[in-house]
Length: 172
Picture 1 (cartoon, rainbow, N blue to C red):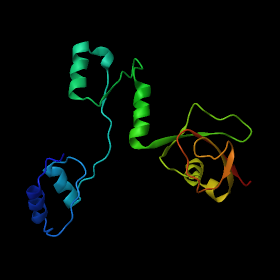
Picture 2: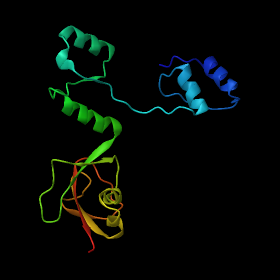
Picture 3: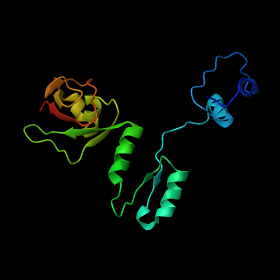
Picture 4: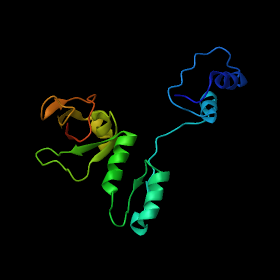
């Protein structure tokens, strides 16, 4: 269900001296977006629309906002309304994962996770903690979805999952 027709695509491509190409369009895009892709001068990034101060708005205003911005998250930072929903949406939309650190012989710190990009490795976690941790690395223990069993010993290349608990063991 794409609005651009073949003739429009051909004319845009010929303007940029592209005369022989296989073009696959997998989403409904505008002519401007096609031009941006062809010229390579734009980069489209993910985004989250947030409407703040909903505690000050009346029901009619909120309904109008929901109609105009159906994917927006309505929050009140002062009233702590929907802030957890916003956090969850940011994690999922941008592909972040939460890694909880567990010092040796102590319980895991489940209050403040380390925020990493999705598919981060133990090596990247070690680098984020301290620059010497990769060089002095012995092994890591992992509890969570990426581990085959609780407390699995893993190496630097192990890919972590959201909400994994990690203990890093280094040489003295």
